Length: 211
Image (cartoon, rainbow, N blue to C red):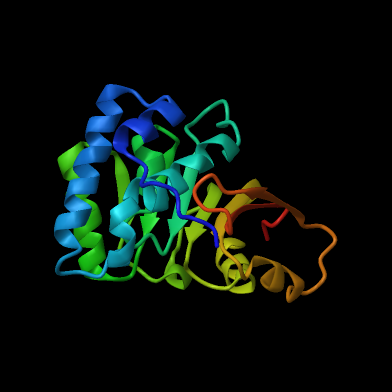
């Protein structure tokens, strides 16, 4: 039987990713708000709070290494679908990744996201709407975590992605089955990379998707 690793500390997180002290202060404020709000709103599973720096913050922050370069004339634009507690989108915004849009239909979770953004002075756009109702938003990157099966995620992402855009999905044990169930599409560029946060999870990067 494998032994679970010791919980990741904020210092461990900062060292492993080279995060500045100022950014860590914002992330620690975020973590404190998450634990406070989670008592009354189901933002994340309570059993994950004992290792939240690995299960949520590292899981999100690892996507920084997979973001494409920004266009020459504007910031990279990212939509985080079903953002929930803000993973991965809020973490990526705090790390300075892009112009980040957090799409979440639950009004209470949107209130939490706005409070995190206000408290930490993080410039994000919180969009309180269903994904299929989004209009006027085209992005370079679509992210999602624990939201929906892969075929549905791709349907959500297609209308949002610019022609050279990519999807970055955090996926668990079911990823191989979900990939196998997709309709054949030789134009898709699909790659998987091991997760730094969990041995049974992967980062799925998909290109050539824009409609």
